[in-house]
Length: 187
Image (cartoon, rainbow, N blue to C red; front, side, top):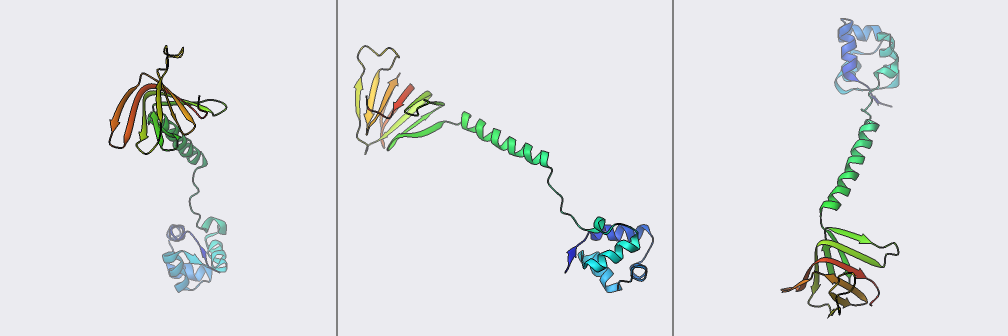
């Protein structure tokens, strides 16, 4: 069975001793052709490997080619950096979610309640309601205590909107706001 050995090390050891391939062949008891194959290709049998190690007066394990093992610390550092980069990117990029079937909300920050029923979108909020999605907009009388001015309801979801600017676009309706609170239950 062939095994991969460090052919550069074999050549280096041979030259350090001042031996030719022919001399190494004589000292190790391995044919010249095998010595040439070992130095050129790095493939050999265990018997040849032991003979060469004996000729060089070294442990045969030192002649076996070992692929470089990745540095575990470096690997962990790269993994940590990738995770940190992903988190940082998600913070800096706009958060996007589908709050109700067809309605898309984008914001700089998104806060989800512990029971996961309410989501608050903050900072440059853009809500896009496609023309195909039925919805209802109503004003909140006396501007609720939390400062919301509009309620948008669609398919069981309710959106409380603060600082709204509504624009009709080709695809439907675009609502830009300072803050939007989405709730799964219609209020």
